[in-house]
Length: 180
Image 1 (cartoon, rainbow, N blue to C red):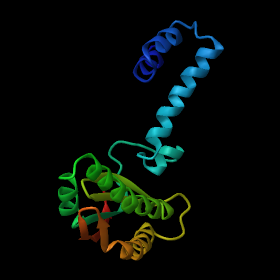
Image 2 (tube, rainbow, N blue to C red; image 1 turned 45 degrees about the vertical axis):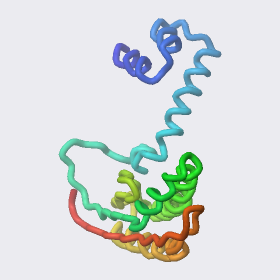
Image 3 (cartoon, helix red, strand yellow; image 1 turned 135 degrees about the vertical axis):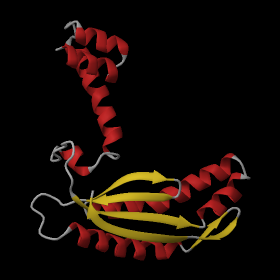
């Protein structure tokens, strides 16, 4: 019970956590707390590996597994963002729009092939493809197919027209397979 109360104190607003800990949470308070926790989960779900999100992952210490890692790095984006940043707020908003229209479809492609975005590193992505339960094809093949589809998508982004001029963007992909 103490552990549950500690968790509630971390994730709920202080008033709701106090009520939940003292067992005086009424139905409306319970619903409010549930909505709050659901909002947190919904916000975080996009950043969780698929196995964690679905409850299929068996997170054990020291367990090694085969994986395929994909690194995706955009060249030309630093020049674009530096030039647009000189414009001010409008330039920053334009950079955000460009990066979202560039990476959102790539993230969707990765998800379609069972990959998980591990992290963003500026204008680069680190992606993991792990074996899926009952999988017939390999994670290596899924990663390769995702890379091929991503390459097709980015052909539309070789030249990006902005308020600060036209910029050339290129995406470099690297795949590595092994045990991690």
